[in-house]
Length: 140
Image (cartoon, rainbow, N blue to C red; front, side):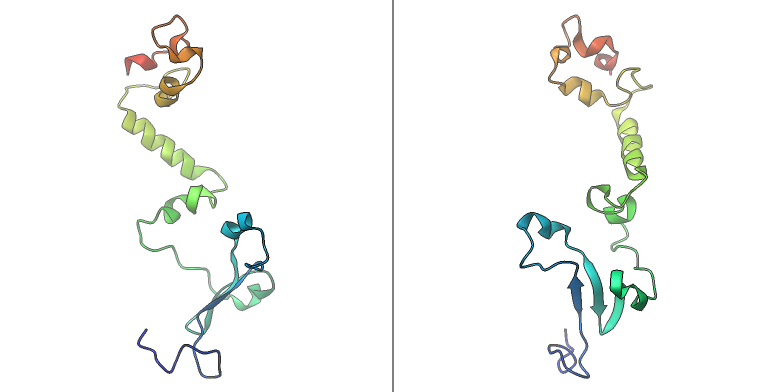
């Protein structure tokens, strides 16, 4: 980091980049490791994030995710976990509707034609009487 003499040890006068995790990484079940978050984050010796007992030390909101095109900025995290209102999903549905190329939505499936085409039900045989429940998805 070209900061020799400033970092590398926990001692007075040295900068610290560290986190305090919300659980004991070595003692928690393996399935919970992916859900581990930071209760306290220090970068360059300064507190940049704190929650819980450390919240009073966190004086600024976290900066937006980088890079600018990051899905985290649009969807609130991997799998849209940070999107409590589902607006990220609405955005994906609008994109899918625009990409399907049809003039209007099917009254049964909306713009989700792929679900109708790939359904593993008796309706999956589009040539049978019940194919896609009689909708117009086959015409798209």
